[in-house]
Image 1 (cartoon, rainbow, N blue to C red):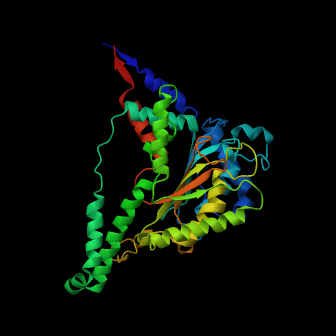
Image 2 (tube, rainbow, N blue to C red):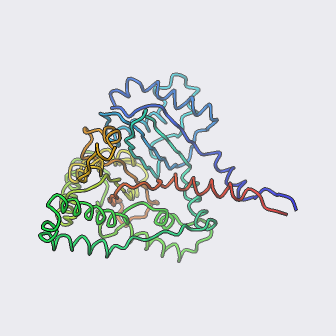
Image 3 (cartoon, helix red, strand yellow):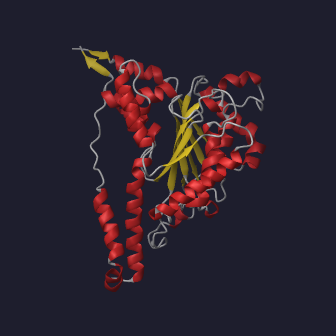
Length: 403
């Protein structure tokens, strides 16, 4: 018997040659500060592209950005990401026009999936960027679904969480008498956190819903695709999400749209008091159905988050940057070096966001829509990281077949 290289792993490796991974030793800065360093930062990007022999991706792309920092006065995540993405495709500031081919992608509107997050850590700042052809991002999800054994995971028992939360509120006096007011408040905070986490777990952009939105090409009958679309629609319009119809498609209408967003988010939080005081950091999640018109006035996905969603979400929900303030003694627990890395200037701000553009004509409305949700930050890998680990493990374990 001899080893023969597995054809599937060869194909996976071939596809992965088009992937771009960058590690930038920079910190998050304001647009003004980055403006002074934009040539320097763009050169760092180009030098890594050259060194690693990466080539510009000309097709639609998915992008993931993780920012590790202890900067005490960073900009909000959507502002920094917008400025960084601009440096990855804009040719106006190139020192050498011949370096055009070493910019990672061509334009903002090529970004169909974007996931970004701040990580506040007591160490030197760094930015991790993963860029994938969007078609590869989707096909990898389908490959994992068909070829890789699914993980067994424990599902949270929502009813038990809900019953515990309601029982704490109902028997407040008994708990205070048995323990103390401070102890009761700590118990209620933790129960509220569990409720918020459980409720928002279905608001994420998961591998499951992404596969429904983008079925496997060439193998799925239209009747099944229609069923998938119906399921995806139910998840996108999940009752706890906030649907914002009709993207502005005419100039001078953005301000009116922002007023409508604020009104809808304010009404949402008044109706769902469980979210009035968020107990942990959040990632905002958005499904975006663009206007049917291919050209015209409308925003690409990084500007949608920058101008329409994040400023108003932060104003209405004011999420914390840490869950360590839940009646924990930071010094006693030895957590001060981590809490010191969390910038007080950003409190009341989402730690990150995730947005995916839906296929054309996905919406019945010609002007499209936004479906906004949020989820409690946890230690799980983001979607591209999760895909990478699954695929890398598969390649390592299936390099050869015996013949």
